[in-house]
Amino acid sequence: ALVTSTEMFKKAQAGGYAIGAFNVNNMEIIQGIVEAAKEEQSAIILQVSAGARKYANSIYLRKLVEAAVEDSGLDIVLHLDHGENFDIVKQCIEDGFTSVMIDASHYPFEENIRITKEVVDYAHAHGVVVEAELGRLAGVEDAVKVKKEDATYTDPDEAVEFVERTGVDSLAVAIGTSHGAYKFKGEPRLDFERLEIIGKKLPNTPLVLHGASTVLPEFVELCNKYGGNIPGAQGVPEEMLRRAASMNVAKINIDTDLRLAMTAAIRKFMYENPSEFDPRKYLGPAREAIKGMVKHKIKDVLGSSGSN
Ligand code: G3H
Ligand code: 13P
Ligand code: ZN
Ligand code: NA
Image (cartoon, rainbow, N blue to C red; front, side, top):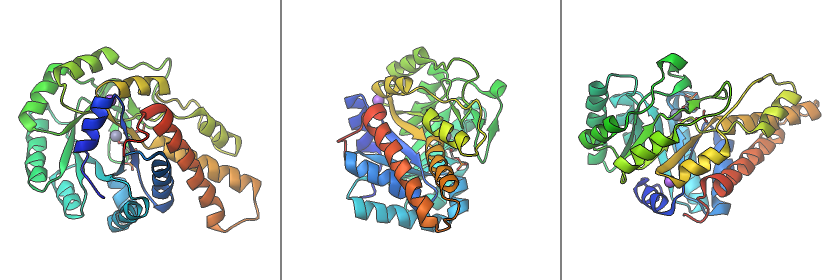
């Protein structure tokens, strides 16, 4: 069924693992993720950004996710990723989303609290859970660009006050991750000390890690080998994600790794089969690449196998 993340997060917190939250934009992406989750009998979150809603037309995504629930028999959360304001949250709740993120992290603290609280009150009245963000990640999304020098890590005491005053269900924290394929210039570094302090101060709040793709070298190399040009791409090492999942991080967001897996498979196919022009011939391998990558994440990184 389409469910909220409440029970999923409780089990993940108790079991020391995390639920994967994967960004979806079309049918093949949804199918690849859900087939992997089904084989692993894993709980999953499918999340939709504003850009995804604009690209696919949200009704198509909602119907595809409904089909995925029916076909897989899994419990799946349909989540709004980086909701910009009250209106988009309201629209998604009307559309049947079971979880929403309100991202007012770029506003001053008091304003973030005010906006988040308004969303929480509305969402809870409709049986929908809310993720909010405190602190700012660097990096690029469709909607926002945050420069390195404007990024700020989450302050643990502010986090406590924020959760108390908003009643939010889960909290995205900034500890050094960033969106996109270029997360670190030199050695990857996350502030685990900060993560641990936040976890101790907020033992009952599931924490969320955005910008958590690993930028798997295997796919970057395939892209570059078959005509791509993505030099210097670097993500969060999987060992760090395992460590975060064993702590109070209950939700780990992955989009870039899906994009890279899909593009690598399509580039390879196009290069090796220049006379093919049936989209199923390259979208099929793209879907398989996503499935393989997501299975690996579930089994070897998130630890969520069998959680459904
Ligand atoms: O957080 C950003 C996600 O990767 C979604 O990206 O806004 O380009 O769909 P998007
Ligand atoms: P990545 O760019 O690391 O995949 O992060 C995705 C994300 O945080 C979506 O909200
Ligand atoms: Zn994000
Ligand atoms: Na965890």
